[in-house]
Length: 203
Image (cartoon, rainbow, N blue to C red):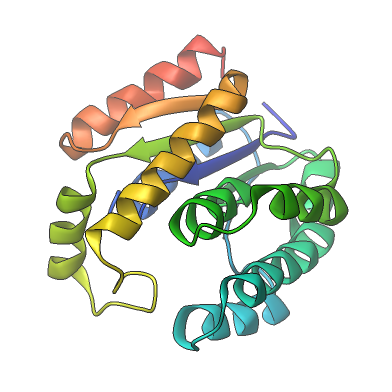
């Protein structure tokens, strides 16, 4: 169990953080070196860009360019070196989020996003993407109970339904690496689904 790249995806409120830590612990118990990271973020530069993306108004193209700039630094400085030394990288979001949020939510040109994807990380794709999926209304209620909204979280339900559809389209295009997880269930049931996916892959 080395050199695996695992990503968690889903709309805000899906519960990614809780299950990322549980998965990382599972992998460590099986002897893997695990690096947990996030996007946008993961490096000093990318974290600075994250603050701009989450809190400053901008158009969809600017947003996409900043997200990919942060990702480029993250891949070069963190993800690629960790995979090269045999670590498991567990990342809270990756490029699927850009296709979902900027492509689906903002309605930005998917062809441009695909070109940026190739320029920024080429053939590098996750070995497994766990899509924690739940209705936008359920996610909104969870977010309201948890924290103050950032620029994305303040969007309306229609935006998050488009984001959800963006994730579904991405999974349909690359089904071999996606696992669809029903995140509307309780934590134990969600964790059981994730465990089942890992067992199925012999991980």
